[in-house]
Length: 441
Image 1: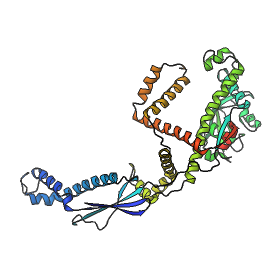
Image 2: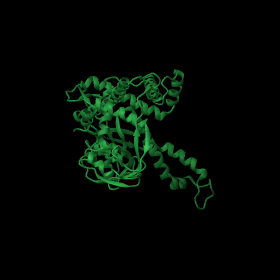
Image 3: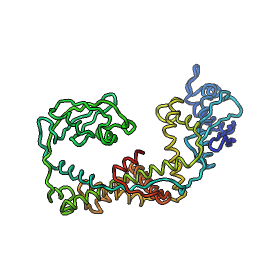
Image 4: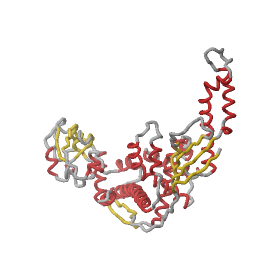
């Protein structure tokens, strides 16, 4: 057998395989002999069919099967021996002139190669690392929410100015159907809540989304509108009232503090606010890190130029998966996934350049930290090492969990690398300012 690579460009090649009789005749003969005792041909007893008739009836199919086995094995070994770094898998080219009766059987496979490119992690950029602070407004609001949450809800017959109104926002056209609780201070125009005054459970109040809130992004929380739709959304939504309550605020005392944070952790309003600030800023730091990772990702994708075997990949996408895609569907799928593929290649190059490796100890340490955090959320603030390691062992025995957690460890290591290499500008902002910056506004 003769196998060779034919370069088309830097990321596209064809593997050409020429198969001759010697490559498959032994296996075909063996299969024919195995078929002899089982062959059935009209006019002959089973097992007594002459060999030439067996070859005539079954030989062509057996030849095709054995040649394909030879080709598949040779192709796999060739890819390995040439150390080809492929995108997708080889695609057989259709040859309209191909004949199984030819002396030489020529098979061609298209392949797409991982591009060779330079990754400059130190490139000049305008990336900002946000430090998000919890301001007094946010802290006071959280204190009030805690008092409401742990206070006593007093049912009311009709909506009053100090009512908390539970119900569901709906708009069939925009697919809005979200249950929530509203109060007078929710809306940008305080007069909007006047529409609810005097209403009862079962009544429906209609409001328009345009300018409904101080920040249009609140539509995402209150009505679960996607970010793509929030700006300038101008539709009527119905709010069906389901329950009306006023809140008797919980007293800020030691009993409440212990219920929130465990005995003795917080013992005054000032300590409560300090704890709220600490917890909020820890959460904000995680969100800021995700934004930083996203911003670095976008920058590297835009600044790192390389070609992909796009036409090959579009054809390959038509062949994979349970549902075969049409050329048009493959075009759409490629457009949707191209950016992710580019970053996947950039990510791999960054790890190789910086010699980043994921060890089992890395995975175990990361999982242990996650388990302890989750247990703390459910009030288990001081579990034993034996308890934690038992859970870790169970988690890491699941291969799907290992893959998921490994991806998270990689992301964490890359984030630290990007923080170091990208050298972003640090900027301190409030949470509202961070939200505005996150959506480019």
